[in-house]
Length: 183
Image 1: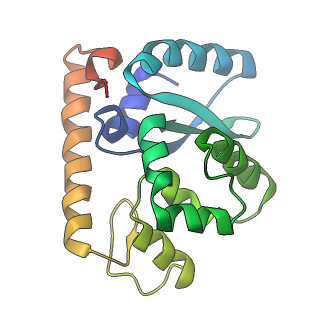
Image 2: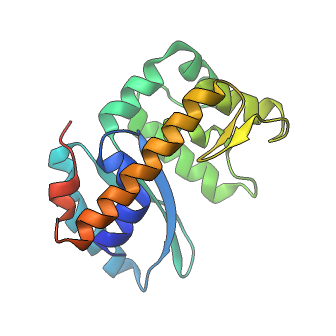
C-alpha cells in the first residue's frame, strides 16, 4: 500500500472533512503491512489521523483511516451512542468500539451495517439502511441516503472534489504529510 493509495481512498479524512474512510488493498506479508502502517501512523498521528487494519485475509487487508477526535465526538451524539449500544459496543471508549467492530467484521458473514457511524455517515441514513434492509433510499453516493438528500449530495460532491484536488496535488509532488490537515 502506498501513500498514493491512502490519498486516493482517504482524502476526505486527511482533509478533516470526514470522520473516516474504509478501503481494501493487497498486501504481500504481515511484517511488511505492520511496518508500512507503523510508518504511516508515525507521520499521520501527529496530525490527528490513524490508520489500522480491521480485517485480514491471505492477500487483502481492510484498512480504516480515521480521526479519533472526530470519532469520539460522533459517538457522543445521543442517537448514535444509543444505536451502537444496541449492537453491544462500549460507547464511551471509541478505541474499544473499533476493536469490537473489527471482531464483528471477522466473525460475521454479513457486513455490520452500523459501520457507517464509524465513517461519519448521518445517523438517519445508517438507521434507514438498517431498518429498510438497504431498500427505499432517496439517492446513492458514498452511502445510501434516507434522510436529507440535498445535504448528502453536497457532501458527496465535496468529497469527490477533495479527492480530485488531493490526487492532483500528490501528482504535483505534495507529500501525504503536507496534504493531511492537522485538527
